Length: 193
Image 1 (cartoon, one colour):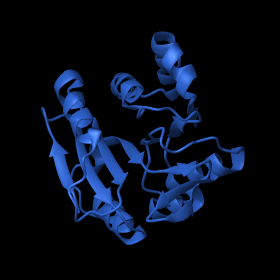
Image 2 (tube, rainbow, N blue to C red; image 1 turned 90 degrees about the vertical axis):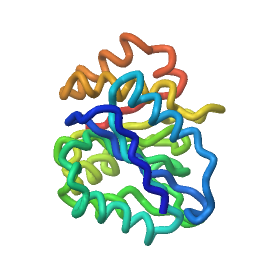
Image 3 (spheres, one colour; image 1 turned 180 degrees about the vertical axis):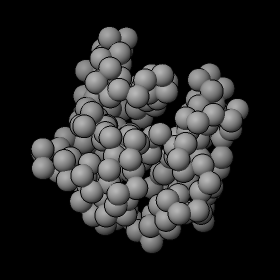
């Protein structure tokens, strides 16, 4: 399982990034590593990057994060990079609902934002996101509703840097749209809280 820590300086704002890949045994050529290095260098945001290729490796990564990672309290954003649509994510050619995924995090995500990259369409009904927030304890669930030919990292970097500066999710969305409204509209940024 890929496990890369990208550290610039010790801080209490960190990102945990979990990416779904075809095979964790094969070195994956992902732009996320470069993106996370850029976050560290440009925005001084520390991150942990892991990959998974099955529901078992997903569960193992989440279990390690929740119960064994000494920095867990400092992860403010759980960044999930998985294929999927609406209420489901794809792991190893199987689809899992957000309700099923919420069970892995049950009650453990207080004061954290769960953010999906734009390779997963996140257009949710009220009961879906509310269930996810209630079960996980997360303060917000965010992502995009519009597919794009490029990964959402361009906007994600600004989103994460603004999230580092404010704990208020309403203010976070306001500042993001104020500064990057064109990208937010094009990608269909959504934040559920």
